[in-house]
Length: 318
Image (cartoon, rainbow, N blue to C red; front, top):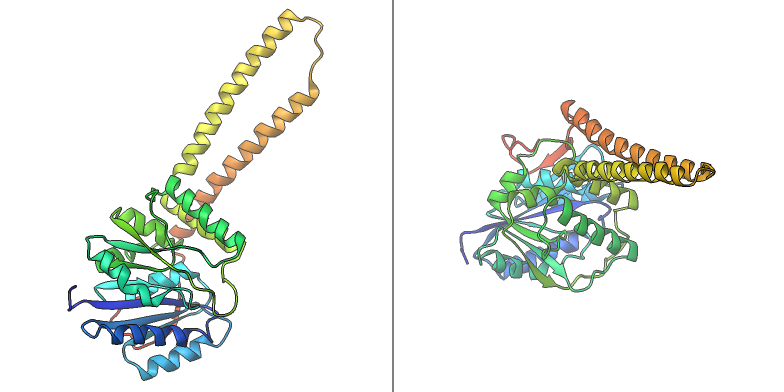
């Protein structure tokens, strides 16, 4: 191991007023066993409705190695991570949760894997301690990521991972408002590995991700980093056109063979509704892309910083 490596822990904070201190204590305990490594902790308050900003601000004011950022409103976990990467100065960047579910004591297992030559190493949980629909959402997101943004099939992404600084530097070059860290990582490198660890029970509360937020996050990834949905739309359009042409030929031949055949109004309406629904779906998909282009051209911010602690003024986190 490189004894000169500095490690940056980046933690988005949302509804973690009662858990974040315990997470920091665990980091301190871990790093007390690795005194050869300098470390810092970057905490980002994603406009949490509880008192977490007062907690992390108070900690940062007492400890210079703890940096704190507060947003004006809730911009999401991935925007918070992006701001943290801009602040982080370590050779290795560790991302983890604020609720105590990430096994901090296994951090150096991920770092050891990095030293085998990988650019990014994700923790892969033996058993995920989440609700059924949350596990299903994560599974669906990973499968769609394989198809749409080229995620390696044997890699499972989680919120607990380590990356090298040059990957973080590449990630923060992204300037558009629709942030999806997985897409930014997977387009930067394919030199990625997993390390199996145990997932802990949540210390308190529930996940900040609702079904709507999960869908919104997946849309960010798929419309910002892939044109595959548009290609699928084109393929579906071609297939429907071919089916329609063949059905038209079949109808003509059938009418010539069976002269007195009655006109099938029900089947005609069903086909019209099916084709009309497909057209509206494809138009909606195209509209989603166009709308996001429009918002990006209007320079919508990734996030807005309200307050910082222990961050140099010359450090540009915007």
